[in-house]
Amino acid sequence: MISHEEEEEEEEGEGEGEEEEEEEEEEGEGEGEGGEGEAEEEEEEEEESAALQSQSSTLKRTLTNHCLVKSP
Figure 1 (tube, helix red, strand yellow):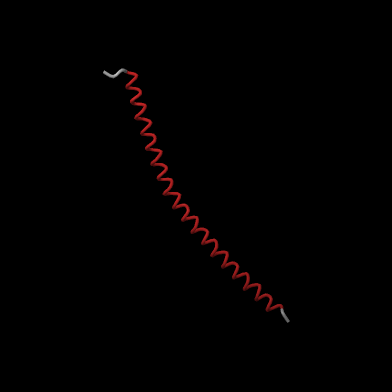
Figure 2: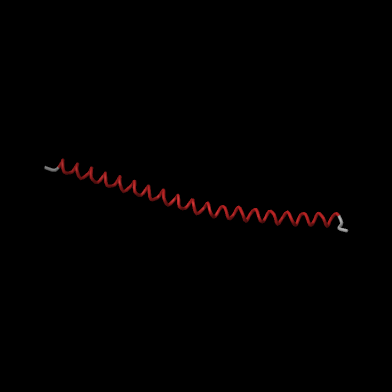
């Protein structure tokens, strides 16, 4: 027969294994989300870059037109 103390040790050992499995699953999920986060961040940077280029072009056009009107 198994003593009471031996049963507790077996239960503790099983519990630790389950915790490690859960941590590994969480880490795996985090890596997948991290990849999605990077893609979204990259997309946002591209949108910001396009918006800044558009604004830059508009300002250049405005400045050029202003200078043409002002010149004698």
